[in-house]
Length: 179
Image (cartoon, rainbow, N blue to C red; front, side):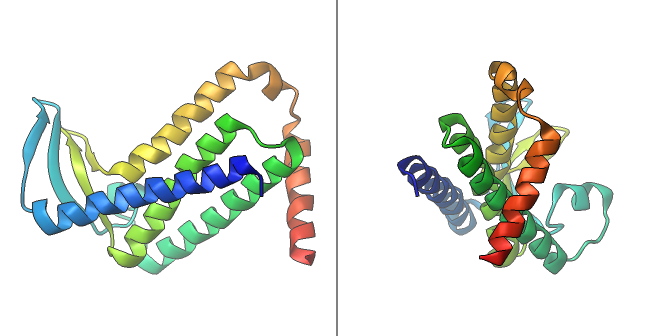
């Protein structure tokens, strides 16, 4: 494993640890507290989201905890394999490593929430909208970096043939299955 990748995994471990430590502290000391962070907009107001996902919560789909766990585990596996494929095909890239560190941290934190917390301890409330936690921030940082990367590296991205990328990933998966 390359040094860059070791740094990526250490970053994932650090981000997940920070997120879980915050939740432990809130759960043990501040679960019944509520206060303003930014007047008329942002509040600290912890709640447990027992719907297991934003979509399930918003649309009241009633998807079970175990189905969510299976879906998140499969997504983590495919994202991990795609990340390995990108590193194999294109080499290590700092911005890609950073992007995936945030994505993995958010996904692993989501899995931990479902398995160990029986839902998500969300604690930042945006008035009139939703309540979120640090893992949601991690996933949005990933999305923001992906957009930024698309803008800044547009010339490089134009040279990538998406069909060939998907075919290459399929071959990569097939070769991994045979290993």
